[in-house]
Image (cartoon, rainbow, N blue to C red; front, side, top):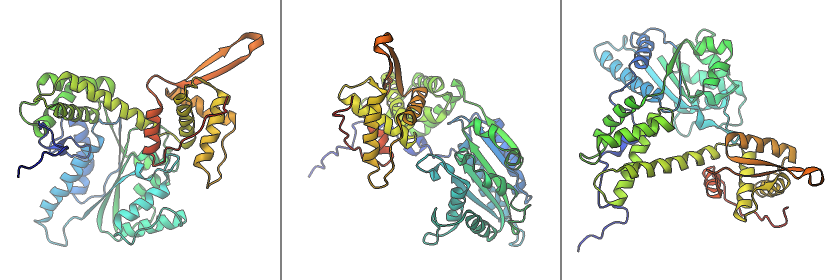
Length: 426
């Protein structure tokens, strides 16, 4: 019997190796980052030579190669140490343990994390499943004691990489202690080197002097890629990921130009755009990526970025956006502040029936609403009807925002989209 075609199959396949276009892919060659690669190599040399490790702080915009360069050198260091140790006796071999923590994985509902939570993450990285600790129920000092005990049970050098380190915010206890842990007597048998990676320039500037002295032993700035560099990176990825003849040089140049223009030279954005363009072309059954596929993929990415930005807001701002969404669905926007507040109160109570959390006052809600205006999610119009009619403000979504995006963002945070009645609000 002839096999029935799957609904998931396309008539044309353009992507030969999709892993090359994944965000977590570590290339075998780093392009267009010779200076940064050289600086980080110099920082890593003491580990290879069995000397005390150095600490480093890497900063720059999203998608400029910070994580890729660090992963590449981490892998090279592990591999080269393995080859070196193969020629040494057991007693002379150099031991390296690496710990990679993404601090964003420990954010709370308020989108912040802490040294305590990252310390829990380090402990659980080192422990087997079934012997891990929870993020609650321990005093902070107890968690730090457990962490240092686990680290000191290792040998040689421990390289701790803290990606998205700016998520730690103001609680910088760990950033001060870890790089100095041997000097201040917390560790005896191992040496620790720390690499902090951040997209946030403000975080770096606001670090306390004692943390800067500990963590920022060497600072490496990653500048945005220019359009030519993005094209070089994309050509390299396309050669590995896509089948021959499925793209032209002009398409690569268009993708790189859009990523440079709209995402400040982000290679991550450029690679996502290339993959999205190929997938759209596959779906249409054509044999080569066209300009319209790139533009469609770019619009799709923009939509996803907006949803992600909405989902990153704190609970109060999400409640306000949800209130505006329900008002917009029944054509009650732009809405006066009192109308938004009445709907907001219904939303808050619907999502906090068990906890008993109460809505903010109108003034408190308005402070969050003003932030949403500043972020570009909401438009506010000030009305003035003169001495007889008075003054008031009306609020509605900006052009790029709508109820469907708010719904996706709410659900992206693991919350149910609850129906809220706007009947009776005025």
